[in-house]
Image (cartoon, rainbow, N blue to C red; front, side):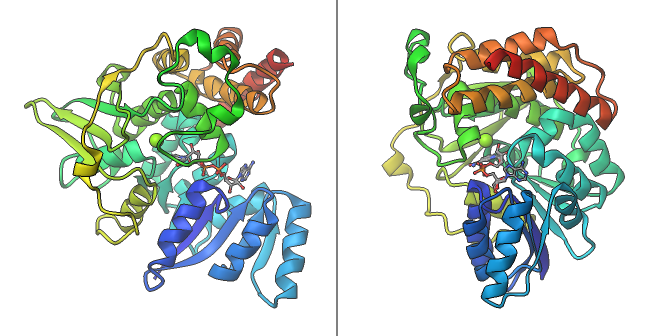
Length: 391
Ligand code: NAD
Ligand code: MG
């Protein structure tokens, strides 16, 4: 029995993960579930999975949850706050930590899991975008095992040479390039001029995937793919010029590895996050995920096209930040989080997102990012600069 802490259990990845866990009650037990403030959803999850601990970031939500659990006679302990998130990620009772909190808030508990040498199933790409160098060093130093859940990175992981035991030991040998596939999001067929007036409702309506709001907007701007380029750089140790993005509208090939001998390995499957989650959970074994078998005849065709940096300026900005190095990618991430939130609240237009990120990147000077304090300080400075611009 492996004990699992699920950080961000009420979100899209969290719910898919619980679906997989519920299919394998003989293999996994839930140690802790965590959420920001969704009391009702976390309460129902506690009833079904009976975790030892439930954490809510928000104090008053935690009080409400504790009352509800007491009323139905469940003895799950309820904790609140950031320190409690860290505590359940590093607990000696836990083997696997699923990092599925959205945004920068996921960094500290995920880092705690790395320092405690856990098996980390990483969905929270922002942690690597903010501090990839530091994070990978902690994974190595403390003997943690890092398994990518993001579908593209999980696909690449599956296409790396057989025998790659730990992601951070992979040296890139024999690989010409990594090819990340991108669906292009809901606006892939729009002209840049038409993007001026798109709404949050249109932006979160992804054609192939059902996801949380923030990552859905990131997919519409293609900042999601930009963050994934940075994530791939840290996970697989390849420079930006060996990480390519191409549009693939069907989302059947989840990414590819192009080897120097001309072989290109691709991982395929229906667009359902339960596949990469299950792959990371059971690695190096294979177990069922509940995902329907791929019907290639029904898919019919696979299309590929250039990912246009002109229509998707966020993708270009992510490459620029990666090339610039240091805390540039943390600044990019922080500005993006503020701009996306402002767009979702209808305070700014869709096309302002990229402009704000570009302005923040030129306003806030990056440091080398050698310490967590530096990363957090530059993240905060970028947030302040972005808040001024969304007013
Ligand atoms: P979501 O918005 O659906 O869920 C986010 C979860 O984090 C919720 O449980 C919420 O309660 C919790 N949370 C939010 N803010 C918090 C805070 N400040 N402190 C503590 N907890 C907080 O997001 P999602 O779509 O599930 O994405 C989660 C992560 O996985 C993101 O980093 C995203 O980029 C990544 N990811 C998601 C998908 C997907 O298909 N949804 C695919 C690949 C990667
Ligand atoms: Mg992805």
